[in-house]
Length: 349
Image (cartoon, rainbow, N blue to C red; front, top):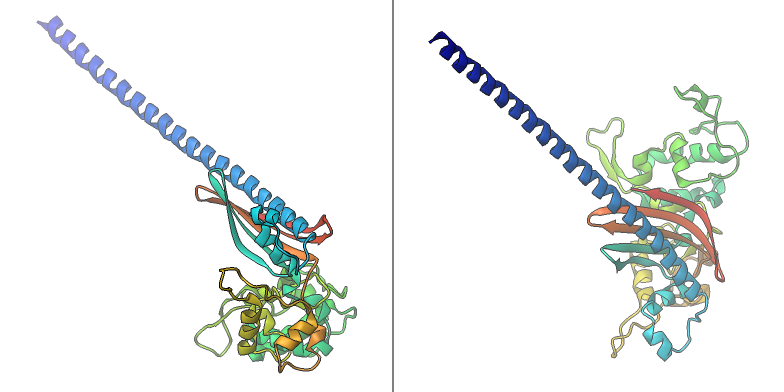
């Protein structure tokens, strides 16, 4: 009897051990399956990311092809049968006319490319308004950016101090010894006459990411934040300082002397063209400065020295997307003839 009970107990213990082993194995298998699932998803993400990166690079090559084609075109040339078969003809013509290409989408395989090709002189060159004689330009720019007027003296004086070649601070400005070298992470003012990138302004006293890129701006003695659009989209560090009126946004146009919101909209409407009875868009881009002045009457005298109608420097933004995973390439290039020189290159998530 005793041996029979002992046997039953032994069998019960063995069953419990087996159940424990099965449970542990189930947990291990589940863990392995979960890890495999996570690894598969990570691998899938990086595969899509790699494909998206190649698509973005392909977008830059498409931009090169369009710029090469535009260099062979004349604004008033007749459209040929060969042109009719060229799916890219309209985009090449835009670049030949000094216009911008924005939001061009091209599907390729399982992904897509979204491409902007914008003449860089569609912005103001900050390095060519770098001393107090250009204070009026600065004030127009700060006004367009929605920056409160009480901040203007510090921003302008600090910028002029940052780029000038002396160490004497202006009334509301800052130089190395009196300000930048006293910061927790000290550094020296540029003092070279020019900044290298627009983002360098973030090193200058008074300039914040909100001032540059927009958002809620906190002010002393004001309870509620003020929302500003910022000035970063108005600036470049490339070009001869003249604004390409065929490509500039209304905000950039409003930084020109005597151009308010109403005039800026009139310029945009005038250059966009119209559709004729056949459905074709008539060319309405400005051919030169004189053409612009004749079609936009009532502008301030001397505005002609601020503007141009074409460009050799472009900002290319190419975004490759594969199943929701995107990669962006942003670059500044100089294109002359059929030679494209990359001046700046940045890849972003």
